Image 1 (spheres, rainbow, N blue to C red):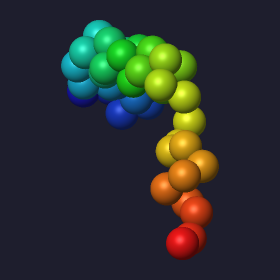
Image 2: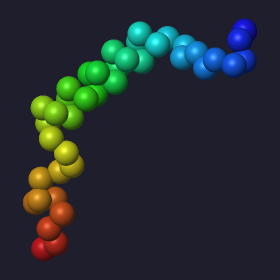
Image 3: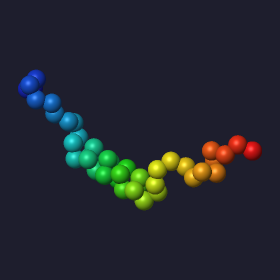
Length: 40
């Protein structure tokens, strides 16, 4: 193993999962709607 170079295990799978997460975030938006943060 080459200790001078960092290798990402399962690189393709990690990129695919991150891509799906970014797509979901862009579709759904950030955080919750304002209503759950309101106090009664």
